[in-house]
Amino acid sequence: EGKENSSEKHSISRDDIVVGRILGEGFFGEVHDGVYKSPSGERIHVAVKTCKECSAEVKEKFLSEADLMKNLDHPHIVSLIGVIEVDPVWIVMELLEHGELGSYLVEEQYTLATATLTLYCLQICKALAYLEGLNMVHRDIAVRNVLVASPDCVKLGDFGLSRYVDEQEYYKASVSRLPIKWMAPESINFRRFTTASDVWMFGVCVWEMFSLAQQPFFWLENGQVINQLELGFRLPKPQQCPPHIYSLLSRCWSYEPNNRPTFSQLVCLLNDFHRMELEQ
Ligand code: ADP
Image 1 (cartoon, protein in one colour):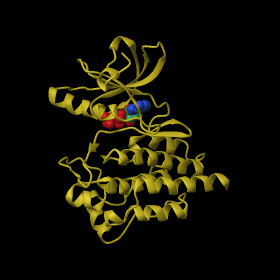
Image 2: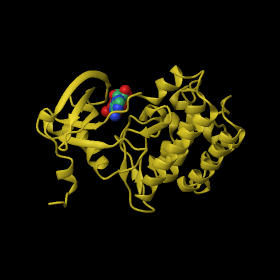
Image 3: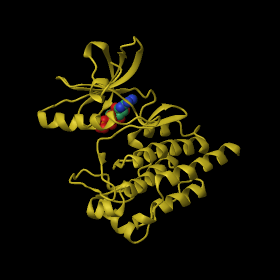
């Protein structure tokens, strides 16, 4: 009693969930909203991820994301509420009422202050500094994987490609569906993914935020990107991006991974920038 291991903590009963409308289509199946009645009687709004063609193999992949999330606990990472492992398999997460950041940025484009965008960058950076401390590489940092809890709180929400890596080691990806336009040169060339390549991707994600969800390198084909990067070209400064933040992005996009800042350094800098924005 009192001692919970993570599998007990996350085992919940289907009877305690009322499933509602469809929120969106995920890679494995529909995502619904719902209400979960917790053991203490509290009603919690949740997102229920379902798995459509759930063969044993697919099910393992589907549940691997939830397995990773069981060990994470951070105010800017979507929290896992539980998993129902008997068919039909469900992953139950906290609901982020305002949905995907990409659409939110478009809807709210005329009201979003630079200070607010800087706050979102800071919050995602804090989540990534937390992962950096756990030696976890995310590999898919992009606005499409950030969800909006409230107008002043965003969370990192998708761990489909995340992996633990040993220090100094890296994850060698085999997947072919990779987000080329977000990727560091060494990830494109050698499928090499490290915390330093996550820093590059974070830079692209910040670029997306300040350009209000434009696609990075929309003017290029995937196949042209690596050439441009090797010639030294980088994404241009979005109009709404303050010059001091753009110069940080340029450092995140150093060709040499060791020359990029770490997430903990970025948290300090973004924290100062956010404070400066508030004082203006
Ligand atoms: P997958 O990673 O499996 O492709 P997503 O996590 O992208 O699935 O989920 C699909 C859609 O469901 C998202 O685009 C988003 O609109 C919605 N969604 C997913 N998780 C949540 C959540 N926790 N709160 C609110 N909406 C969510």
